[in-house]
Amino acid sequence: MAQLLDGKTLAQKIQDDLKTKIPDWVAKQGRPPGLAVLMVGDNPASAAYVRNKERACEKIGMASFGKHFPADTTQETLSEAIAQLNEDEQVDGILVQLPLPKHLDDVALLHQIHPDKDADGLHPLNLGRLLRGEQGIRSCTPAGVMEILKAYDLSVAGKKAVVVGRSILVGKPLALMLLAEHGTVTMAHSRTPDLGAVTREADILVAAVGKPNLITVDMVKPGAVVIDVGINRVVNEETGKGRLVGDVDFANVVNVAGAITPVPGGVGPMTVTMLLQNTFLSYCRKLGV
Ligand SMILES: NC(=O)C1=CN([C@@H]2O[C@H](COP(=O)(O)OP(=O)(O)OC[C@H]3O[C@@H](n4cnc5c(N)ncnc54)[C@H](OP(=O)(O)O)[C@@H]3O)[C@@H](O)[C@H]2O)C=CC1
Ligand SMILES: Nc1nc(=O)c2c([nH]1)NC[C@@H]1CN(c3ccc(C(=O)N[C@@H](CCC(=O)O)C(=O)O)cc3)C=[N+]21
Ligand SMILES: [Mg+2]
Figure 1: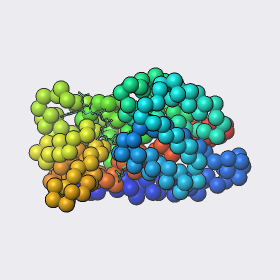
Figure 2 (figure 1 turned 120 degrees about the horizontal axis):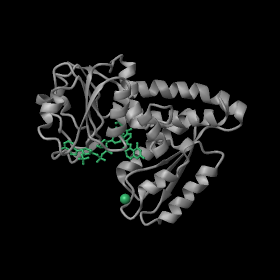
Figure 3 (figure 1 turned 90 degrees about the horizontal axis):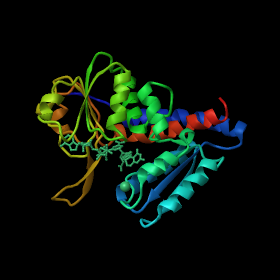
């Protein structure tokens, strides 16, 4: 059986650490770190993620400024909201929940977030810094994956890493982070023929696609580290109940992999935690420490 990479417990540990640090800062600075989340429309999956973030903020003593807009909100309204948050002294991190409704230009809004408040690490300046190997705010999900590898002493240097999925939110920045840690990195995507032939080469295999059971046991090299980023809600035909699954056929792959992240309880909680950490670090930098 593969070793379980427990993102939930690791996330808890990092959040507890933030929770003990924040009161001293509040005492000295007169305000807590603040995170603003902009959500547009009523995507139920997004709503759950936003709730998780708000709960985590409250738990660790961070201020959260949730802004919920109706699905038909205009670009101008959102642009104005971001301009205000950029100026707001109480706000250290800003996140625009993706995807946005089709009529909105998400890229324009992401570019507008002040790069020092870009808690999601999606501003082109921060992505450019990652590309160049400079310090900057790193995207949360890929940063969370790297933290899991580090916490379990799973070294990347010299290993063959395969990332399935090439989105700007997950796959692309993660490939750059694995490369920075000296992995030999391959990116696979929907146009990759014979995906299994590529994934079977991987010492470290990451699935970030959004398709349940895309990664089957025959696609995994025995002993590989398998990181399942996918979050898919599936409904059990018999009970009618919904549950979360990743992109990996966990029940079978767990017998072959050397280590594996579960869903839920793997990468997801680390994403939330990296968002809090990015916001805290922006707060510290703003105060000149
Ligand atoms: N755990 C967490 O914290 C997070 C989880 N997620 C989850 O991760 C998953 C990916 O998210 P995101 O990157 O935003 O998704 P996107 O839809 O933006 O990207 C999906 C990627 O998967 C590729 N792809 C699609 N089908 C296949 C296939 N059959 N074989 C190989 N590659 C394929 C696409 O290729 P192409 O580029 O060619 O279209 C694309 O690059 C989702 O399930 C999402 O919910 C996302 C963020 C955080
Ligand atoms: N700008 C932006 N940044 C994002 O990082 C972003 C986004 N938009 N849009 C949506 C996706 C998805 N995503 C998740 C994060 C955490 C969990 C998470 O905490 N999952 C828990 C379970 C949560 C539950 O039970 O509902 C787990 O996997 O254990 C899930 C999904 C971030 N995303
Ligand atoms: Mg759009």
